[in-house]
Image 1 (cartoon, rainbow, N blue to C red):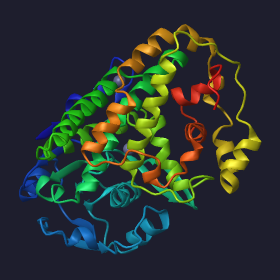
Image 2: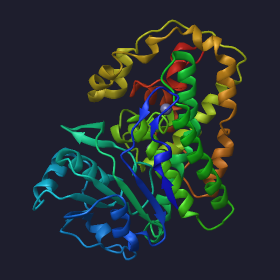
Image 3: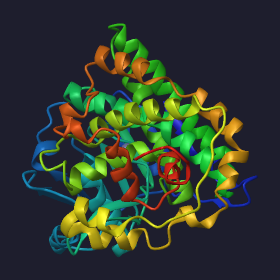
Length: 415
Ligand SMILES: [Zn+2]
Ligand SMILES: [Zn+2]
C-alpha cells in the first residue's frame, strides 16, 4: 500500500496551507527490495549514510541496503538525548546527501534532529510500529535533562517493510494498536476544546485521525476474533496518524488527556514511583480511564460552571516535589483562563453528543483483554488508591485544553 501524501497537503478550508515534507509512504511486504527505486521516485541520490542500532542491524528479516557509510549505535542505553545525537553526528565521515534511519521511534529522533541540523533529507525505515511517530516531524528529545517535544524534520520518505515489522514482538504491535485507539479520546478532546474556546480546528486533519482510528478499530476487532494481524492496515493507520502531527506541527489530533498517563510514567511524581510501561500501553490504560470519566460526566443533563482559579501551588508541590517548578511554569498561562466557563454550560448538549461516540470503558477493557493489551493502572505499577486523582495529576502536566482539564471549571467534579 502506498499512501498518497499529496492529497493531504496544500491550502485547506481551515485557512492554513498544510505543509507535508513526506512525499512517499510505503507499507509493503518486501518494500526494502525496491528501496533504490523508491529513492529515485523521491529524487534522492548520492552519498547516503545509513544509521542502525545493534538490534535493528541484526534483524534477520531485514534486507540491508548499500551505504556510503553505515553507523551502528549500541542499542543498550540508547535514548533520544541531544548529547547522544550530537555524538552520533561526530561519527559522520562527511555530510551525506541523505540519511536513512533503520529502527524504532527512538532512533528516528536521531534522524529528525541530525537531518534538521545538517539540512539534509532523511528517510525512515521503521522496524516496528508500536507508536505513530514515524511520519511526524516532532522530536521528543531530552535537552539539559528536560524532555521536550520540538518540531524538527519529517522524513522525505517512509519505507515500511512488512516482512520486518511483522516479526516484531507481539506486545509491541499491540501497544501500537493502543496508541491509535487513544484517538477515541484525543479527537473528542480536540472537538470539545474547539467548541468551548474556539481553539483552531481542521476538519481535514480530524478526518485523517478518524480514518486512522476506524482502520485500527477494525484491526483490533479482528485480532480479538483470533484472526491474523493485518500488518499492512496497522502500519498504514500509524503512518496516517503521524502525518496529522506533521500537518499541524503539533500532536493535537493524536494526543489528548489519555496520553498524559504516558508522560506521568516517565516523570514519576508521587504515587507513580514504580510506574512502568511502554508508550502505547500507558495511553491505552489512559483511554479506558478517560472513557469512564467522560461517560460519567455525560450522564449529567446540564452542568454548572465555576470561575477560573489557578492550580493550587501547595497541591502541585506535594504531588510533583522537585518537578513542581516545571509544572507551575507550564500552567502559568493556563488555557482554562482564556475563555468564558459558561461556554461549557451552553455547549453541554453538543459535548454530550461528542462523548456518546466514545466506546464505554467496559467495552474498551473487554477489547484490550481479548487482544492481550494492558488495561489497568495496576499493570503499569501505578498506585490504584490514587483513583480519579490520576486524572487531575495528569491534566496538570500539560497546558492543553482537554475535557479532563475542564473539570476544574465544572461544579461538583470533585477531583
Ligand atoms: Zn486544514
Ligand atoms: Zn502516542
